[in-house]
Image 1 (cartoon, rainbow, N blue to C red):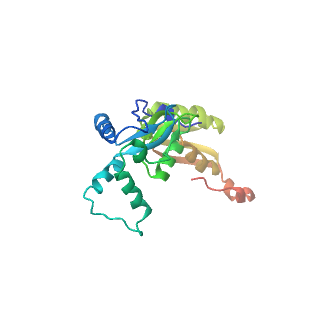
Image 2 (spheres, rainbow, N blue to C red; image 1 turned 90 degrees about the vertical axis):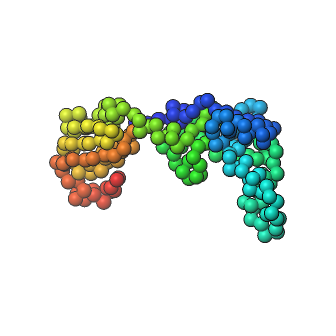
Image 3 (cartoon, rainbow, N blue to C red; image 1 turned 135 degrees about the vertical axis):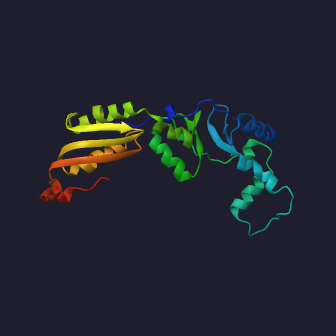
Length: 229
């Protein structure tokens, strides 16, 4: 079982700019493309940084000239002031940019966006060259997966690898919710099966109505068993 790759859900029609792109050109591009940020790339297409609306708004923030310099000025405030004076993408961009490799799974990409607190990120190939953009909305596309596809993966791949035959468990899927009914050989398999099914792309929730033939969690070997859900 494997998760979908970022390359299958990313947006490939990506606007990018060069380091010498002017402030006016940047604002015009964001407005025309109706995007909130744009990657800055070098002549080989490698991502150098990202210019966002927030980076450009610093020019308005300091437009009245009332916010004076101070030796006690915080670094983040000092950086914002520097960007307010910037005229080119190289002076305005946030660098280094948070990028996502095209070959990673949607699960890893989601964790990266969350940990870095960004809503979208440039997608790069093995050479660091821009190949797309992935957003939180793009990653959520896995939950549009048809129920039949989810059922086929659960029955034909996952349960097969656990040596559980299709006649032992009934698997139904409705709007991404998987229901498991039947009997498994060992009690510990219930938690294991539920966790593995939950990790299948497109699964929203797993409902288990399972019984077991043997309670292996009460045996001496139970000390090696750890619940997996």
